[in-house]
Every structure is written in C-alpha cells, then in structure tokens.
Length: 361
Ligand code: PMV
Image (cartoon, rainbow, N blue to C red):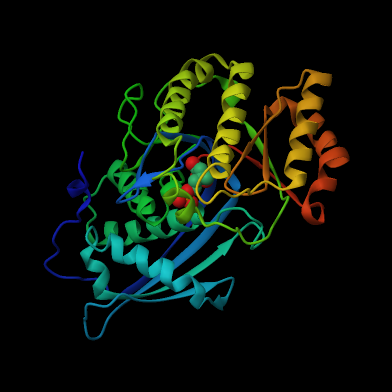
C-alpha cells in the first residue's frame, strides 16, 4: 500500500456547515522502541507497544465552514479550557502535512478543545494520545463527508494521519498490542500506519499492568525530534535498528507462550538500548535521573528476592514504567507504595493497564 491510498475522494461540494466530533485516545508504551526515522515520519525499525487506557487525551473538534474560503489553515487550540497558542506551531505543522490527504480541511475553521487525563508536564508524552485523538476527530469529519469509507479504512487512515503528527501516535488508535513499521515476520505490518498485532497472544498479556512512576516532571532537555535526528550520524545506528528488528521477531513466540522470563529480557534491554543510544550520540545526553537508577536497582532486587515477573521500561525521559501481570497487582502495589514511591517527584505515580484503543464520546 502506498500513501496515495489515503488521499480522500474529491468532493464536488462541501455540504456540512458546522458540527463537532469528540474522541478519547490513549497513550501507549513501547516494548520495542522506535528511535530514528526518515522523511516523512518513516521509522528505521519496526516497533510494538501496549496501548494504555487511563492515560489518555480527550479532544473535541468543532468545525465551521469558512464564510470566504481561502488557502489558510484556521484553527484555535483550547487546552484545559484555556487558549493555548504555544500548541499552534505543532498543530499547524500537522495540519499542513495532512492537508494533501484531506484537502477539504481548508473549507473549515476549527476549534480544538483538548484535555489530558494525566497531570500536565508529568513527563508523560502527550503527543501520541494528543495527535491520535485529533487525527480521529478529523477522520470522523471525513466520514461524515464520505459515508462510504469502511471501519478498517477509518482506523488505518487515522493511524496514518496520527503518524504524520508524531510517529508513536500511529500506535494509539487500536489495542492492546500494536505494531508499527514494516517487518518481514509480521504480516501486513507497514511503515505507514500501525496494525493490531496479528498473532496469538497468551492470556497473561491480555490485561497486563503498567504503573508509571513520575520521577522527573521537568521539561525534556532534548525533544524527541532532535533525538530521532541524532540517529542519522550515530555510530551504532545500524546495529540498533537490527537489534530492534531481531527483538520484534523474538517476541512472537514469547507473546504466544507467555514466556515472561524472555519478555523481561527483551523489554528491559530495549529500554536500556534506547537510553544507550542517547548516551552515545553526538551530542550525548542522559535523560535518566539518579532516582531512575535507584528504582531499576530495586526492581531487580525485588525480582531476585521474590521471583516476581515485574519488569521495567523507559520512554524518552526519566519516568519508569513498571510492567507486570494482573495477578501480581496487589503485591506490586504494596512494593511500589512502600519502596518506590519515595523516589518519585512528589510521590506521584499512575496505575494504568493495557487497553483496547480510542473511543468516540
Ligand atoms: O513519537 P515520537 O516522535 O515522540 O517518538 C517517541 C519515541 C519513544 O517514545 C522514545 C519510543 C517509542 O517507540 O514510543
């Protein structure tokens, strides 16, 4: 499939005057990480993530037909009830990129009302949930203008559009496990959009838990755009992309059999490899904080002492995601609150779990 598949039908007229659509879209946490891309937002390796449920963005898109059509994108962003001009450049860039696939956008002016379920500046990336929620609202508008589009096309194109806003957003439409990036061992996988993981998944992963420890809520020293860019001249880039693709393949029997020991090995190695890339790029940087390491050490000690299958992963930041099976929930809660919460900023953490994807509301 090429990107021309996602160009919307030519409409003879734009019949809708005004209205609104609302979508709630989740964040996701990658097990195999995407780090490194080429234009236009094409990943250098395949990745897979758990779609989350509690951490999400709720967006309402209000559209009104322009009185005098022009070639400008006209919109306002209202975040948590207040105008947020700081978000304009990112949204403008996004709308500019997707205009080729939804040329009807210029016929409207938009108000984008958006809220996150997680605290602002918590260090939880809101780009995946935010861009996917907006992409879904825009797809609802497209479907209203062209009711013939199928549910499958709707979801694929929502993921395709979301990807153009933020790569990892391509994995936030469906759930609970989503693959993005072409991989020879994964049928129908694509660089252009995310797909629901197509093979058998052991029941232990159906309701996997993710507790997010908010270690450092500060603004990131290096944006993910800059970070991805540093992979271009990175001396270990080729090996890294190969490693990620190997991990994708190794995960297939692990997910099928519920082999948690191998799952832990792959997931923790992925997290540390992502950070190893940052620590060896030019310029190099460290996003982990001392408390990130303290938490990791304690997870390892807890595992040694109890035989637990708790493991961790990291995003491009200092926060730690604890991943564990549902039947360890009570034990992990006790451990987290007694031993790990003290290493979180203001003792803050969020209990989340694998979810089914975005919902219209
Ligand atoms: O979606 P972006 O461009 O912000 O990239 C995010 C990449 C990581 O979160 C670090 C890893 C991933 O695969 O989600």
